[in-house]
Amino acid sequence: MTLFDEPTPPKTYLTDNQKLAWLRLIRSENVGPATFKRLINRYGHVDAALAALPELAARGGAAKPIKICPLADAEAELEKLHKIGGNLIGLGEPDYPPLLAHTSSAPPILSVLGEAKFDLHKSIAIVGARNASAAGMALTRQLAAELGQNGYAIISGLARGIDSAAHTASLSAGTVAVFAGGIDFIYPEQNRDLAKSIVDNGGLLVTEMPFGTRPIARDFPRRNRIVAGISLGVLVIEAAIRSGSLITARLANEQNRDVMAIPGFPLDPRAAGGNKLIRDGATLVRNVDDILEEITTFELAQPDLFQEDGDDQFVDWDIDDTPTAAQEVLSSLSHTPIAIDEIIRSTALPAQAVQMVLLDLEIAGRIERSSGQLVNLKLAE
Image 1 (cartoon, rainbow, N blue to C red):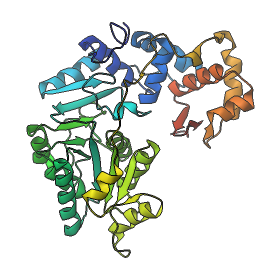
Image 2: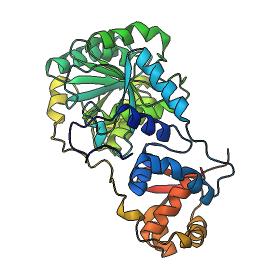
Image 3: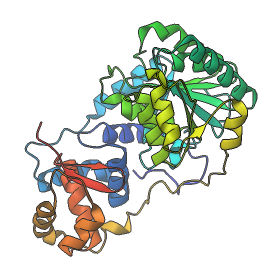
Image 4: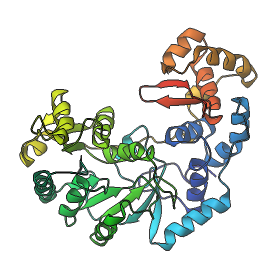
């Protein structure tokens, strides 16, 4: 089975069987969004990538056999999602958030509840403190409502405080709540009615996490990259120095999105994060006109999501030479992140050999990647 039954034109939908195959691959051990794409680029289609996982893990030195998502588990997840009225949207399908599709870590599969009745090409994220001040909440409602009047959907994370105010004020214009857990896990519980109102008013609930997943701390930064990725820009209203809102702003900056912040009184801890962003170059926002002046929409071409016949970085390399290459690549790695280009230079190996070895090590769970094409050995758990 190929990624699509026909060559990848715009407006192509995945079949249920294709969605199940995609779901199995992304739910398999050590396969994240970027790894998913590398596997497809290497093997050309999902079935071949699934079949290759055991060999890749073994070649990478995995301590135990890799866990591959069984078909029955994928079918059960899809059935549970359909039972509550949800659906899976695959990267490249027409309903996939268009701005998110153009990020390097775009989830291959999103679980969604609701049907967007607004233009997701024009969307702005509003994030901020859970313990927001009354003034901060009022300003959030005002800005979200005015942005909606100007045709912009509002993206946020359904948290208490600023997130909730932003969603509530934009119900009629369009809003998207991104979850850190499963689509069935409303967090916090007190926002269950708000989540229902979002769907009832033509908005979306979105997550990349499996059905039934209870979010833990490390899931929220992953959620925040989606909040930033769906949006043209991120507006921070009241955020502490160490907060998820600043993580969202950093991720937005890495994705070349506009970062904006409301200034605040220097002695208020809730203003410290926004003030720091402004000091570091974020746009200072006083009113909606400042936002509209900063935000520029742009035309998105259909992304070249996958290469059906494999990526050039994996061709013209003799698989029998991989063990020797693996030792050289491993010798160049440490727990300190290093650029892949530096590994290529230090080992004098062909780029495709290094990429092949890194994929093996990644599937084996021995390395981790970070932004900027950096890679390092994973610390033992």
